[in-house]
Amino acid sequence: MRRYDLLLKGGTVIDGQRTPRYTGDVAIADGRIAQIGNVSESEAERVFDAGDLIVAPGFIDLHTHFDSQIFWDPWCTMSGWHGVTSVVIGNCGFGFAPVAPEQRERAMLTLERNEAVRATTMAAGMPWDWVTFPEFLDSVERTPKGVNVLSYMGLAPVMSWVMGQEDAKGRPATPDEQRRMGALLGEAMDAGACGFSAQLLGQDSVQRDYDGTPMITDIMAPDDLLAFARVLGEKRRGFIQLLGGDFDLFERVAEVSGRPIIWNTLEFSHDQHGNTYGSYQDILEWLNKGNARGLRLFGHAVTCDIDIQFSLEDFNLFDSMEIWRDLTLGSVPERMAKMRDPGRREALRAEFDRLAERRDRHPDKPVGLFLKISDMRIAEARTPGVRPLEGYTVGEVAARENRHPVDTFLDTALSEDLGTFFTSDAPKTSEDALREVINSPFVLPGLSDGGAHMKFLTTGRYGTDFIGRLVRDMGLMDLEQAHWRLSGYSAMAAGFTDRGFLREGAPADVIVYDYDALRSLPPERIHDFPADDWRLAQKSEGYRLTIVNGEVTFEDGECTGGTPGILLRHGRSA
Image (cartoon, rainbow, N blue to C red):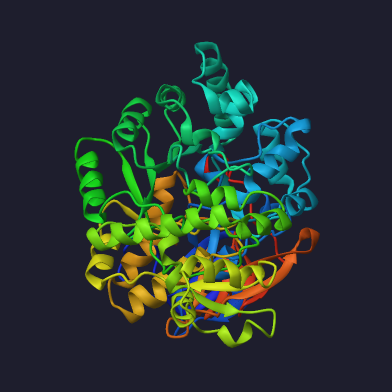
């Protein structure tokens, strides 16, 4: 009598618990791992030969923005293409609940510039069959999913709901408003939220609202943040995601809540938004000291190279600069008119020169992304006049024509109605720095930003990159440790109670891959979003099976169409 639905036969098992690898069989039945050991092929409906392959837990993607994409892309690709079986949404304080029907358009516009997903795409792809946060979770639960989903409650929609959009950006909450917002967070936690999230980047935030103003939580009062923390302290569960550089405040949040904090972003020069928070050694010391005195602080690290490919139709990562924000607000024709304005040009040239002078005086201090336009390459042109420049950097063209890099950059884009594509190479990071960070006891790898910045970033490949580049090619960590970081440790830090490891009785979230063949494929622009929208993406090679709750969702890179994913309320299967 056949007992098992699927038998992974003879693979090298790496279980996500730092157990030394071993050769064995993994039998799956009714969505769970039924047996690990030596299992007869006659006992399974399907036998997959995993000889010479790695069998490991699926990756846990802790930092995504699939809050809208989950409704039209059940597998949350790119994450689903790269071995991810569970995602966490609602990061950075962003979200779509609670939102009143008359505020839906404003909510989508809020994230259009920030996430580089057009509001028309969100409107076409989201059912909007909710108002409250519990109703939003119910909608996610009803939606077919190819990955498991855990959700924070982002603080921005809560504050907007109670205080109104303008007041939430203009003043601290009153005691009554704090009470009402805390009640909404408590309601969300009772419905299954895993905690709350917020970005606190201040007035100069690089992630802006559609009108160029900071996001609500960027400028929220510290007392309001602590009021939310007290709710988690009362609930005695959940965790918190915070982005920004006010480390004293974040320690107070950890103390008041008594809950773990996943802090973003641990990076080497700057993250994908151009942010920097001091040297990585200082961050590691802060994590070590905080944990030594009883705070649970985890640093979420950017572990894959950040190469940017963009056109000025959609790019927003210079947004910490006021003169750049002004330049890029409005329709494409309005923006093009601003870019031609002599006064604005002069201001941009002056800012570029000021940053260059500061870099020359202080070469060890970051200066942001704007100065890097000289090193950006003209990657893809639309017109015969620009095609001869493909492959050259903006700086090379500017020197040849004896022009300022700012003028070369903007005039090249303007000549093609902002459709020229530029690329920016990833900063070089030393192996020693990479080794120190990824092996730090309180660092989690990843930060995919899946579902965000979809027109210029492909960091959703982080799991593939971690195994293929950092482990296999560079030897910075052994494979047992890597899978623990990518799955078991990430799951534990984020409150997943039964996932992230291979263990008898656990849900069968499993990847099977060819260690030597694992790699990311070249970037491509894919037109597969609603309302005829497109995204930049990278698929993968080397994954033989991706299994979610016992069902194969991808086989040899092809999606099976299976949607066995579930909503994980409180991080649990049921």
